[in-house]
Structures are given as C-alpha cells and as structure tokens.
Image 1 (tube, rainbow, N blue to C red):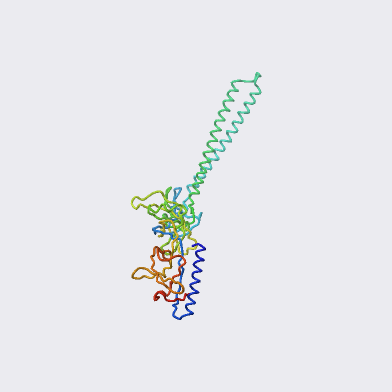
Image 2: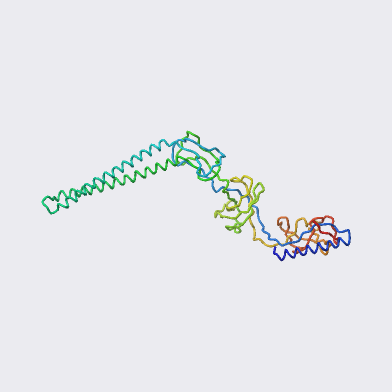
Length: 368
C-alpha cells in the first residue's frame, strides 16, 4: 500500500471517528462499534505442494582398507563433530608392511650410494687414462673398457634410483592405508545407523556407519510441471512444517527431469531455519506454497467486516457517522482479509465489531 493511500485511509478513519463522536453527543442511541479501513494489498496466489526436508550431508562412511574391526567408538544417535574417531581397524599387518617398505627404501638408498661410489671410481680411472693419452703407457683398449664400465655404472645407478622411487611410493601408500584404518567423521552429524561390531572383518567399501546432518537441510518438493515456470532460482516462497512452523525459503535449483507418471519435477529450496526450537529431521514433511501467478495489488477488507446474507455478502460502511448496508463480492483470502472484487473502494471504513444487530441509517460510535 502506498504512503498516499495509507494517509488517505487514516484521514478517512479520523473523520469517521469525529463524526461518530458528534453523533453520540447529539443522541444516545449510537451503537458502539469497531471499524477498519479498506486497503490495497499485494495478493500472491499460491498452491500447496507436499515436500520434505533433505539433508545435504547424508553419507554412509565405508572402510577404505580391509581388516578386522578393533574398536567402534559410536552408537546410533550419537552426535559427532568433523574429525571425531568413529572406528578403528587392526593395524598390526599394516605396521609390519610399513616396516618392510621402510627396509626396502633403506636398501634402495644403499644401492644408490654404492652406484655413486662405483661410478666415481670409473670416472677417476677415465681421468687418469686421459692424462696418459699420447704416452707409451696409454692403452686404447683399457680406456675403452673403463669407458664401458662407467656407462654400465650409470645405468645401474639409474635402476637403483628408480627402485628407490618405487620403494618410497610403496611406503607412502602403506602410511596412507595406516591412516585409513582410523575411520573419522567427514562432517558434523548424527549416527543414524551402525553396521559393524568389534571383531568383524571388513573389506574395502564395506559400510561402517551412516551419518546424517540435521543442521544442513534443504527442502525438496515434487512440483507440477505447469507451475515450474514461476519457480526461478532465487524465487521466494513460504514453507510450513508439519508442526506448524513457517519459514522463508528460496529456490536453489529445478532438476531438469520430469516424472512421466506424476508430471512433476523436483525443486530444491534453501530455507532459513534459524531460531526454530523443534528438532528438524531428514525426510520430515513440509508444505511448500508455490506461486501460481505473479503478485497483483487488490482491494481488501477485513474478514470480520463481511456478513453473510440471503442475497450474498454485505458489509456495513460508515458514512457521516451512520452505517449503510453495502453488498460486496469477495474473492481470494489474503491473510485475515478478503479480496474485494466489487462493492468497496480503498479508504472506505467498515464495521468489524458490533455489526450483528445494525440497521441501515443507524448512528454508530467507533471505539476500540
């Protein structure tokens, strides 16, 4: 409603109060009533669609190495924080394998060092023979043999370096598997299911526990395809939970897959659940109020002003301190008000309390 319309409505109500007071002063038969002003409000027509809360963090934590379960530190219902220990596997075999890999690394280092020493000796021999070149003591055959041995030593050293690289990678993988034997929570959440007990043997990929977050929640609804055009990313809607709580939500995404049986598409919405006292849960029922048309401004009247009569609906409009019977045609509900299709104009003042026994032309005094 514009500031001008509000000011006009306020002036009209003040004038009515003044005239009602004057009428009351002139005669004692003025009826005491409460009044309200006909206003203009935006109407957003919506259609309720059944949806549910969906956790964005819902994961079955699986084993990444095989081995017997040594310990399980959580039970169903436990709340855990990211990085908290969930379970441990027996690491005796992995520790032995790590020691073996470490020994292979040290052996490879020794081979590289031996290769360095051998190559250094042949290079020194080559340098010595080079200094003898041109003298009677120089032997071409001996020089060529030394050169071949030096080249062979270079090849052996390269092989030793490659073996050292492989040994270090194998050691790193073993260390990684040792870390995988300690199974930690990947995010904050609640344990919804536990799959293993101490002593059981698990393979790679076997489930350990299922974690679900009750803090990172979205709303998902299967929306009829004919309503999808009104749902763009960022579109604001209202969401009501089964416990009566309502929230503001915004469309995050419309999944471009249509169910051929129901002709609906899944819509994901982000909602602000801050300050909600009730416990929220994954798959909890929710009602999403999907807009069916663009919002429009409509003339509205308070629901308590509308009286049913044999000929339809009427209201009692206050004019110059008296009431007149005014037929109206009402439309959609707008909160605690009705859309007025015909019969009233913005700024009209109508009775909302004490209108049961009024008669046309009767003087009224507005109070309350």
